[in-house]
Length: 160
Image 1 (tube, rainbow, N blue to C red):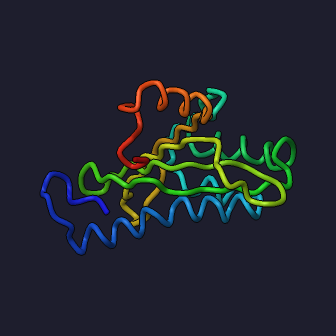
Image 2 (image 1 turned 90 degrees about the vertical axis):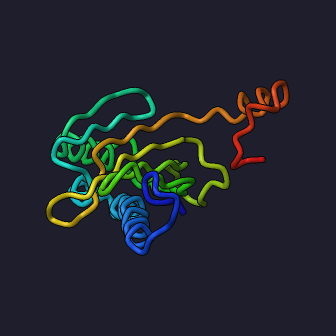
């Protein structure tokens, strides 16, 4: 649980906001499971930016919806989405950065998720938290392991 921005304590408001923010990736997973591009896109702001793990930038909700409509009927047909949240950090009222890991899969859910994801989530005027920016990066666990072995100081505190 992160504290209120710079205040050094956890408030009931932050607790409620964190629970609401954590629901957004869970709703993405559910929409993906239904291959519902409209529901998936509805979780993003109108002007959201979406960067795929191969580096493609999609701009705006409509672009994100159309991209996923194509993916769900083609390359990613029949896949599911796995997600785990590593951290939620509030930058101020109504703005949070969510860092997690995720991956697509068919069949059994993978034990290790191969992508690192960052969501910037904002509270919009209608009271809904939506993703304003999403960045997806391929994780390289072998490279991580080698770097940790050679330079143990590189191991993140959360993994020590």
